[in-house]
Image (tube, rainbow, N blue to C red; front, side, top):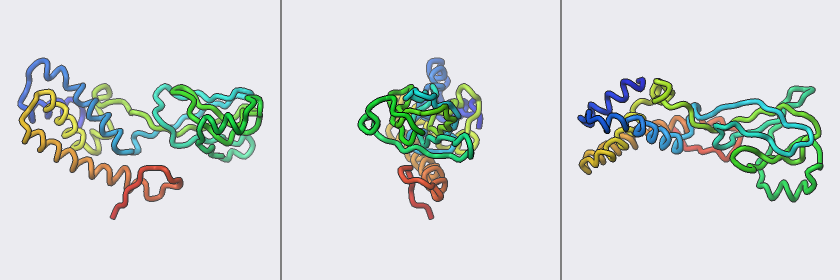
Length: 212
């Protein structure tokens, strides 16, 4: 299902083609997407990039679309092996490596702010690093298609209808019906994203539900 089809379905289900309602359909869809993305960790929310940890510089820049980190690895320049850093608090790194010029291969990281991490110890050379992180993928509103629209159109449709019907101040029984349909579709998506896709997860800390 692409955005044009989704927009038409929202108008058909709500039986509303009023100008201001139609103009707000992109907002309904994007609110639904954000709610879904913060409820289930689907593969489409993962992204990885490579960057450089700079010698003598304690901070590592984050991508502008970064929301949270799955993993950060230093790539050994000789062997090409990946060495994964452990996540710590800023106060741990400050206490463990008090002078910023405590140099070595980084073994720990902490979130400094929304634009950078702090490393411990400070890199003693320029290292290539791979960051695997959580982000919001492009909306179906702007891209016309999306992973949700292609694979789980029901959760996107009923999530958007919940937002649309709230805007219309619709009847309570219909709102409850849309919410029930949304929760049913969300449960199926959660079984995939937080269940089947997590059965072989190497590290703990990821959302994981039991599946049968």
